[in-house]
Length: 68
Image (cartoon, rainbow, N blue to C red; front, top):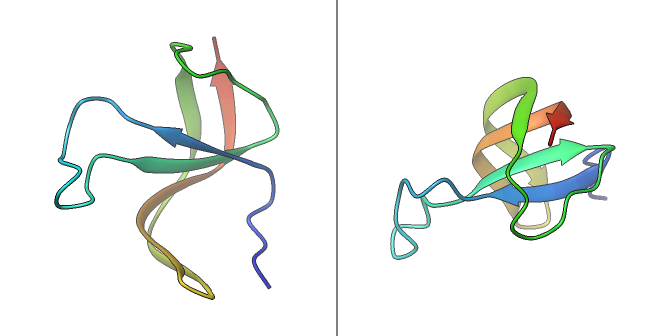
């Protein structure tokens, strides 16, 4: 069972590429943001996180607070 603890947000800051699947950082938070919002994120950075069922992330920011 997938348990990420909060709302998932996908951040794209212009780094990485879609072809290499390196252009997206997943953030879990209790705060909702809209597409196009400019945000500052603070949280726990984890690497190589695997939730199972095909949900694996090279980098994830968990328990994040967001400032808009």
